[in-house]
Length: 390
Length: 239
Image (cartoon, rainbow over all chains, first blue to last red; front, side, top):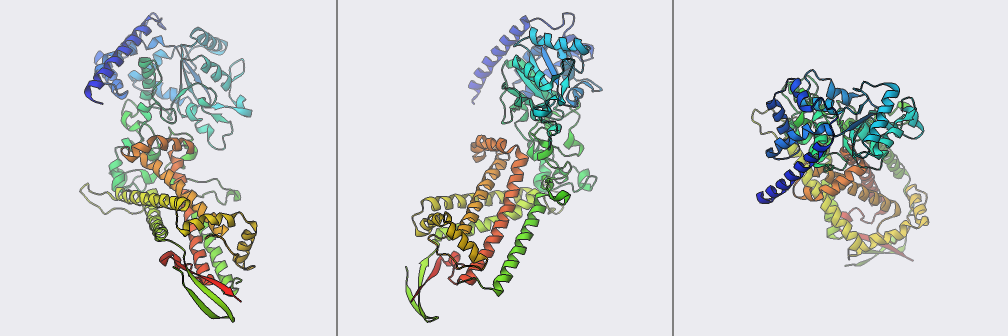
């Protein structure tokens, strides 16, 4: 793209965003007495901190720096978008990771503020009141709310393994109902995106990802948990564009999941050099060698952890010296093999009642090759005594 | 290209030995290129799966052992893909007798009698069947299996390739590659399928080498020689 075309494209995009924000501004606020701006301020963030955040978020969504003020504006109108957040079969880790930080980031404050309509973890309503709130929200904001779902959804014979509330509705029923009239649907975390840990073989609860129970487009934001930036970024993207982001083959937003952990890794040089940590705590580990041989699954995992990091950008697994476990990939629990062991040592559930319990592809291969060699030797021995018929 | 000899010491019968072209030069070249690439790809592949060699210590950041192994793996991988594609083309459209009789083997493949006779021959129970084509049914199935594995290795190899090299060929194949990635359920599975296919191929190759030796020893018609020289001797026993 040459610069002129780029400018024209960005100019029209800027106008589109401006119009979108103006439209959102006309919508009623969630709370008349408060605003995102004042919440952020109350928590000790200066205007400068906020603008820094807006600049970082703008860059993350691959927009030029001139869009920073728009981003700041967009955050202020984020409370016009009603959000319904459902919890399915999960550990609430995605919500907790956003909320339970010692020093809440701007991301978590925004999240906290806008998750007002219905969020099982942070709402005060309980019992029938909670049920009523959900029904009310789905009715009042029909076709307008953003649905965020956390957790896998049991289906089939085991659908009732997840039953919530006094009406005894199954998780699937609620998820289907909420998806029906949502303006946008985000599956937050690997469980709601792909089924997650409870969908690991043999998947006793029959858990599946949200996309399996609705015909509507589901934006997957996988991770265990996904970083706060990816959750809020997906929301900000929708807020600005009003459309769904460009998606990869597993319906993950490209701006966050386009590249592998491996591609963004600070230890990639060590990998190419063939310098590997042999076991945790060795000299290589102290020198920051590559973690491939101690089971890093970065080469098979698409995410931006190396760029965004966790805990207010402090660190991320590979930086701390612990390999990636591949948590943002479908069925990672089954496909990635054992944590801390390379994929070569992935175990296969074999029969022979546990005889093949430690069977890796290489072990099975060597076994079959040995059997072949034995067969060949036997055949050759017979052939030596008893010639084939002419 | 054929000459006839009369050989009379075959139990008093007249044996006519006919020298025939079994394998064309192109056939033999691609066979040995594939053999070479499989050896190199297996060794470098095992290293890529688990880097078992440590580079010598060096204070300068000029170590690229893993990258070098990968480069060799990729170079030989593309060589293998080329050989497989050429061979596929020759089998389907080749004009030489070799390729025509490869396809004629299908006639033997769908004949249950030949299956039984061939199995019987290997179990020392019956005579070698008279074949119309170049391969017996068991051989044909093994080679078909090999090609399924070659293409599986090619596809999975290319899917892994596009994630390291985003420009050029990697860029062109990116879309279709990622389609295969979803089909296989993620990159980790692609890696595993690549690895398992290699094992299956290794086992077929071991059997292939044994059977080639077996037939050379007992067939006594230069079938092993054919993959080097191209020529084979057919015996026609006359009364």
